[in-house]
Amino acid sequence: MLSLIDTKYDATKRLDGTQIEQAKLKAAQAYDLFSQDKSPMEVAIALDLREPEVTQLYKESWNLRQIYDFNKIYLETRCNLAPFLNMYRLAKGEGMNDAEHVIWLLRVANKGLPELENKYYNYKSDVDTLESKRQSQVRIIQVYDTQIMGLGREFDICCLGCELEKKADRFEKEENERREYYNTLSK
Image (tube, rainbow, N blue to C red; front, top):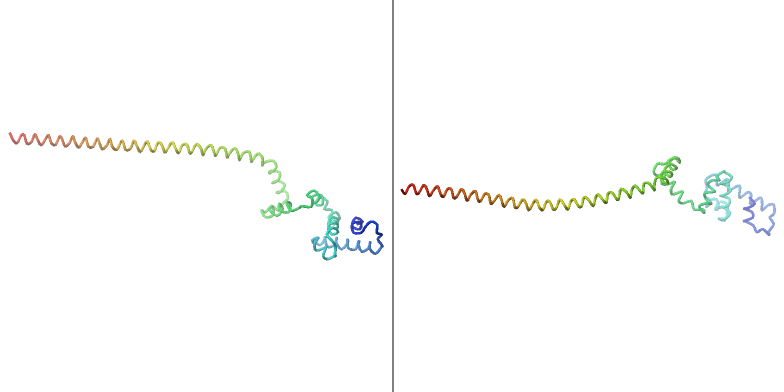
């Protein structure tokens, strides 16, 4: 409490009993408001206090309510709790209401992320290799298709040639039979 009084008044000034009592009264009122989950802004407005005084009383209220870890984290993060609050909101939004789930997830992430990242890059390399092989095989198939089409044309040409030969042979045979027939008739 004296720290609040020291920050509020110059050390050279002497405080009379009334001023000390008023400071104690405001501190008690602030603690009461904080225990009612009032924000520092609401307390500052209600008690007509400046930010440094409210911040100091807020930290003192944490200690009084035995929220030592919270105060320690608050100081370690240089008063920037936003990342923790964001993580809390995200976890809650995903249905992770149990702190043990979040702790387990963080442990898995700390231990498993490097391994998972390594597996990802290995799998990505495997996929790239397989994709390269697939593209190579697609090109080979296209070459085979082109060869098959070429062979098909040659086969068709050969078949047509064979058919034409057969027709020519048939035509020649029929022509020979007609000649023989006409030769037999003319004799």
